[in-house]
Image (cartoon, rainbow over all chains, first blue to last red; front, side, top):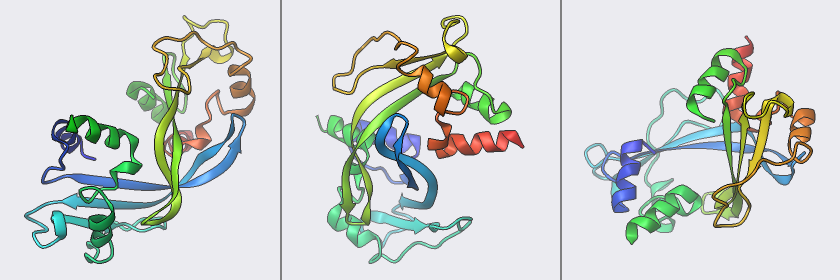
Length: 116
Length: 116
């Protein structure tokens, strides 16, 4: 997340207009190393970005738009936003405030602290 | 890694004296979410730090010392370095320049580029 928007989340528990989230997908490289068993990172396997912007996306639920730069390298240099039904509808239904924050421990913790 | 030491790695492919690496361990929270199958982060499950410092650790192989702050919360506020045989010997034998850089795609890529 862009640092200014993350500071806003920490303070208020809300995603401000202009929030940008970048998700890098990483493959599992191995499940066992010298240190023991686990899930060890391999190579990056995709890049996806979501943007909350009421001016650019007035018609998207929550003003969130979702962009995929692909899952093969080289990634796309440019991409159009996905249709609302392919990403937004699931984020609206299954995530918290359109973000799957429960899957990111730092973000999850920040939201819980902001509530208090 | 501290930013100055990472910049040094990008430029030279070497870990400078004073390099600090912090490793946060994260549990797998789930293996299936609305978006599909994968390994989704749960809670943090430990904190470990390694420091390369020829003045502080003149007798450690490669001048690397390894510290574990535990795998239960609350983590230790202070900890002594581990004995050379418990961490360093495996890093010396199995890692690249004492760091398991192959498991971190950004670091791995930086080292490869620095070689050229």
